[in-house]
Amino acid sequence: MMRLLRYFPLKLSDFQPVITLESTKKRITYFDKDTEIGYIEYKRDIGKICLFFITNERYRNRELGTQILDNVLHDFRKHQIKRVWLVTNKCPHPFWEKNGFSYTKTPDSSVSMHGYTRVL
Image (cartoon, rainbow, N blue to C red):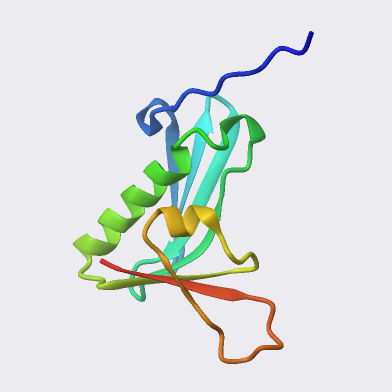
């Protein structure tokens, strides 16, 4: 008999963030003890999310991504950013749409990347 695993939402506050600042980017990597669970990299000055992954499969679909995104959106608001944007290779992208982002067509149809924006 196959046993079904149940995934309950996790609290971001239970994980250790490590912040790295580069010249124009801020990266926050989250750890559960010594295990990296995910990271987000963004440019506060222009409202761009550069990279965002929940890297450890055990932590996906447990609301951590939304909590990480909420923290970053709060950081953008603190810096008076009015519009956040990103580019992804997946469309439609349920995560971004669930979190209030709208699809933006790319002007060049030969490009396999897709834009999403959100007004704050």
